[in-house]
Length: 434
Image (cartoon, rainbow, N blue to C red; front, side, top):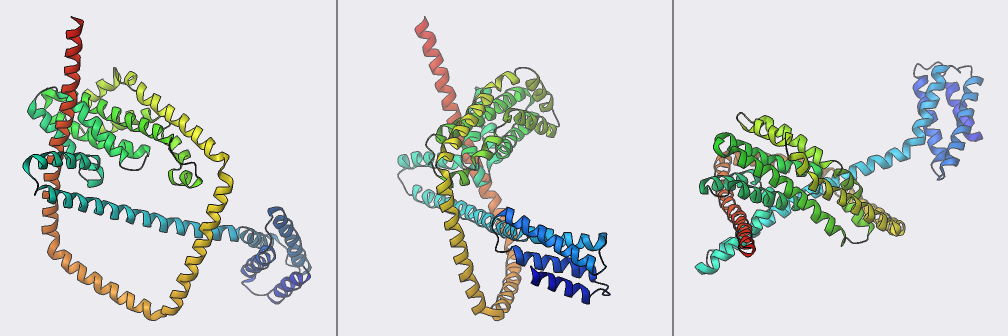
């Protein structure tokens, strides 16, 4: 510590009259402290060393006749900064890596979406060349596949609207058919993406918004539409949560799986989900300019709280299943987690080393070339976009509307067949009783 004492004392002695003395004190205590603790790993040893350094610095200030609240405060700031320096550096590195990972995930989702859409188009082109009987069944199967991904396709509201309008046009079993349509669409949409409460509520809200718009226009069947849609989305959500609970039984017992699904977060997401559903309905009802707001208020004030029992039950069961799974995974997690982190750190270090080598080779010429290329590409892209944008968006809107109409009709067909099946079963049961 003698060398530290001499360096600290010598520096402040030379800078007593320097107007920047306080800044020098903070920087000096930071640099010297950081150097003295950088090889220490145990937190207790680090704090002991910092305590020794603080006493040393304050004694030096006293010997030089500049010990006062401001100078001691600067020393404290420098020591605190040194104590947290490595941890803050690691945090910033982790945040950067997290940001890069999130960007990579978003890009990968976009790539997957494009691949799925391209595959749908490829299959549809082949179906058009099939024999009529085979083509009809194949198109039904393709529509089933597309219906699972209406949210991903970006036509959730449009498809729901077409299906509900078709139900009104047919004018048969309206409430039951709307219930089946909204239940199926909600369930399929939830299963095709991230398992989060906000996403459930966003999907449900989009479907309820469509029901409100149609109910406000067709007031004769407004209550049937809203009853079917509200109970249908609720049932679809409950069904999706129940599926997650059952799928959890077969989840792999690996630490990577905990990291990927973050079961603890999912458990919190399910807490009081029925209350969040009611709040969503109340907020969504505010968009109504007609009878829907009153009807939704009546639904919520009468039988609806009782009908939430199922979603409350499946959410609680799912939370219990998650707790059991987390406990099960934690039993053997520590060694696997250590191996995972160690491998990840080695991989990151290796990649960074390679990246640094490449950057050194490329030098500034590469950066200049890249900048010029980006500017050229941006200019060219803007000119092309200005020419093509109108036609592209117009054509895109037409395709989306056509797709939504076709999927909406298919959703109605699926729901109607389920309603017809339920009615037939009820009639058969009544005949047997006679």
